[in-house]
Image (cartoon, one colour):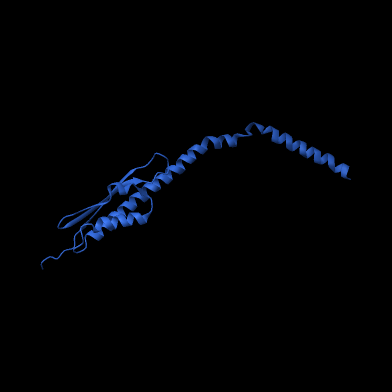
Length: 147
């Protein structure tokens, strides 16, 4: 009985091989397509991560500037309270904004207003690609005014 089943199995295998051999012209096309598309996918991946790093650096700089303004605008604040507060924020925030300590945060106080500016560069995910970041926050100084 086994011998009778063997020719049927052999015919099925032969037919399958012929069927696969007919479509052999497309064999290996998928790896070639992947090799062509993969660099584009990697560029888009790293570009999107770089864009996210730029936005995080901008957000970090703006929050540090706002922290400086909030510290500097309080009633009878010391002259360096805003710069100290912004620097503490940037040290605690991590490395999304690099090079901010070269110029340091600056706070300019007039009799009625406070303006703090934080500058730096974004973290570079793609080597050699980073962007200059500068964010400014503004607020009014708390003071006693006559009624």
